[in-house]
Length: 190
Ligand code: B4P
Image 1 (cartoon, helix red, strand yellow):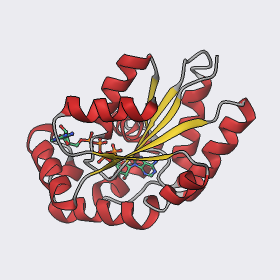
Image 2 (image 1 turned 90 degrees about the vertical axis):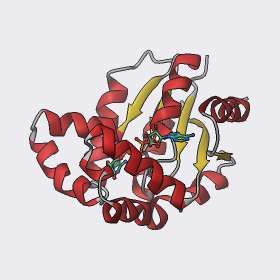
Image 3 (image 1 turned 120 degrees about the vertical axis):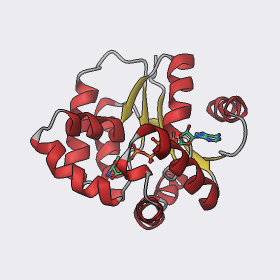
Image 4 (image 1 turned 30 degrees about the vertical axis):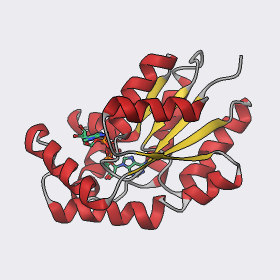
């Protein structure tokens, strides 16, 4: 049976992590969040975590080779997965190309790229709200949040073209009740 490999895409605060939890449950997928993987490295005070921390605190992207290596390791640890949900990855063209190469080698391509769309002011409001309770440094400072959004617009948003060319890009309205947004995602997966 072919694997349900999905990319959940969108700017910081669009609801990728939030909606991943529902999709994993519904489809039995393995969750691969590069943000979560990087935060685990920081918590464990690994060399990789130390390299990533300064960049993440400023709202800059972490180097491509670091995140690609983390994803490769995790995929190899879950060879029997029914599918993967890539959350916050790929974020650059180099990451998207590396992912395509890995999946093509296994003949298990991305089925759809689901892009959550949310206006900037709503993103800032959500992230400051999360920062107030989570203690995440990159969610507590509006300048850092706006830098993350600029990083998304310049380096990540162009990937819409990459997946459109493969006819996999699907835009999803990311504003509204969580369950309504999940229903939109499920309808798009088909
Ligand atoms: P990530 O951990 O990926 O975090 P994020 O994009 O900021 O948002 P996330 O997906 O977790 O939050 P969500 O929208 O679900 O990245 C953090 C940093 O790691 C990056 O800045 C970068 O430095 C680094 N990094 C990660 N991956 C990388 C890569 N591939 N390459 C290079 N660097 C990388 O939720 C946000 C908030 O909104 C929550 O509080 C939630 O409750 C709320 N919310 C969700 N849906 C809502 C709704 N419908 N209505 C109201 N609120 C909602």
